[in-house]
Structures are given as C-alpha cells and as structure tokens.
Image (cartoon, rainbow over all chains, first blue to last red; front, side, top):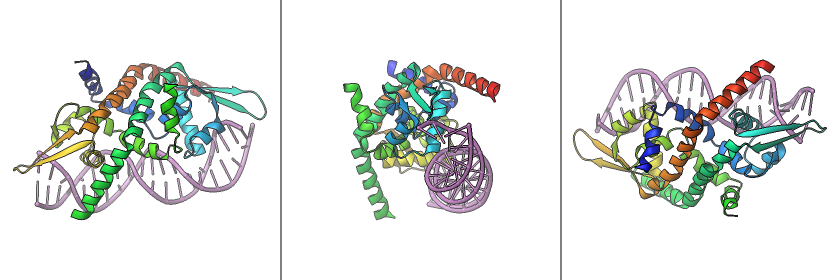
Length: 128
Length: 128
DNA sequence: CAGTATCCTTCGGGATACTG
DNA sequence: CAGTATCCCGAAGGATACTG
C-alpha cells in the first residue's frame, strides 16, 4: 500500500500545485545546477563552465528561482572584483537524492530509449 | 564516494545527452501521466479525466513520446467504438520509483517553497 | 566578475474544428 | 472513442550589448 501513497498524493488536488512545483524544479537546467552544486560552493562563472550549454541569462534566472525557493544560498562578498558564491541550502541538498535518482535513471536508460526511438522512427518511415 | 558517482555521470558528456533525455521525461505532463498509469491500464479518455489540466493535444503528444521512447505500450482493440489502452512497459515502470520520489519531495516541500517564495517577494518589494 | 536590459526567434501549448 | 489538423498567442530562451 505504501507504493500507492505517492501516486494518490500526486492526484490529490488534481495535480495543480504539484504540477507547478514540479514544473519549476524539474526544468532543463534546475536539476543540473543542483547536481553541480552537490557539496561544493561555486561562483557564477564556475557554474557557467560546469554546465556548458547554459546561457548567462538562463543561469541567472535559474539561480534566482532556486534562491527564491530557498534551495540555494547566494553570498555576495564585498570585494573588487565582485565574488558571488552559490551553495545549496539544507532543503536544496534534500533535493539531491531524488534529483540524482532521476538523473541516474535517465543515464541508465539512455541506450534503451535511444534504441526504442530509432526503432519507432524506422517503423514510422516504413509505414508512412 | 558512491554519492559522487551520479554527479560525475551527470557531467560526463557536458550534460548534453542527459539534458535531452531529462528534458523529455521531466516535462510538465510526462511524470504525471507515468504516475497515473501506475499499475493500471487506462484508456485515452480515462487519462484525460485523471490528469485534469491536460489538453487532448498534449495528452496525445506526450503519450506518443512515451510510446516512442519505449516507456508506454499502446494497444488498439479492433472494436467499434475504438478502444485504445495505455500501460507502462517494464522500463516505464522502472521510472516510477524516481518519478514518485521526486513528486514526493515536491509535495513534501511545497509549504517550505511557497513560504520562501513569499518571503522573497516581500523582500523584493520592500527593497524595490 | 557578475550580472541586467533588450531584441528577436522559436516553440510550447490551448482552443477549435474535423475524421475514421 | 480516439484521435489529427490548423490557428494563434504568449512564454522560453539564445545573442548581444551595456554596467557597477
């Protein structure tokens, strides 16, 4: 019965609230940034390096959302040149487990998914 | 050290491949549909009911992607009226664990996140 | 260094209408 | 019932330029 619990919760309010939250923590960049901040404090530029595909704009926006949601702490050091450091809050760190689990699943199943996708394409082309 | 493993994998290829997959399984509807298909076979209309916010279009598209990725089986029964049933494949079911874990985390932390967000807004308004 | 501001294009996704 | 096709708008997000 315990496995049923979460599924029920998910549909608890029709999924509205959950969908909003999920939509925000589960977007393209958030999980990668959280994972990258795994047990390290990083500066803006460091993060920009570590998550290669991300643009300055999206890095800023995603970090702001994480800060706003209490998942990341932003520390500005009053120096010149400026030094801003980002680190996970306890809540942010608590996301690491589920986030890495999902990422792990994705990594583990990439081959199967790509194969399935290739087969599907082939079928579609053959039929179409 | 085992906790480091996934984080390393995540940045394995710069996150390109992972990001693609993650982006697809981790979008607004996919996790909810997978969770809704948890141990039941459902028809198109059933799913449309169970995931209230979703449009016909997005339900179709999301289901097609899931089918294409080998996470969902689509069975067409040659009847009139038509009867199409969707169920998770073994791979699809293997996603349930991580998906529900993430959903569970979200549900658990909604209060904290909303509070943090409210405080942040207040601060911004006060400063701005 | 760590952003902000602006422009511009693409795409997600809702509404609606039609079909086998 | 279970879709497909079309229209259309707003949001996502990259590129670029500017700033404290």
